Image (cartoon, rainbow, N blue to C red; front, top):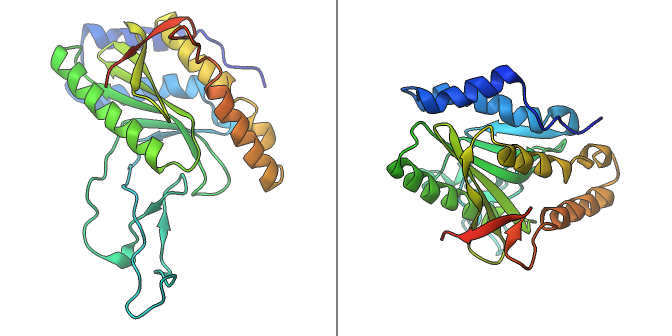
Length: 246
């Protein structure tokens, strides 16, 4: 299957650009167009999965059963969709600090606890200073949690959308959150190229998904290397300057 067209449908581009001219009252009104944008670049036919408002649960070390051995854990241990241990229902009580970004894009697998998250998207209705500052703090928090709870990852990427404009981010396993380039219209070629490159670097995942487990692990390792290929020593990513934000 050919890579996605870097140009999106005209009607979708018009709809996305209209968000900057007349921001909707509710943030939920923006989800449809942005979901369409993400699915354009990350189709399910290539085993991508766009997850709306997923829960980012804190890592949890399973409690020991009373009177059990050190290795005697709850049988109902729970794991998130990326295989990270999370609080099981058997532990009881309320689960604190569950965070909900607007979208996460993942390489999916046939198993419910083995997805590979690589892009977090946060959406705000207004293109104002306050919304940008709030969104940057939230996105940084989401990316850090993904980096610390995901079992294998060299870099994870972020897209912050406020009204009709967007900023691109990258968080590596070592180092601060970096902004890629400047702030652009959500339909700008730089934003579309950013998404297209993320898709391109993971496009062959579908061809590897039916192989043996060890082959799948090798493919994941290659994806991690691809995600880091554009890390140049001159402080740029895809030719755009990197700016440390946190």
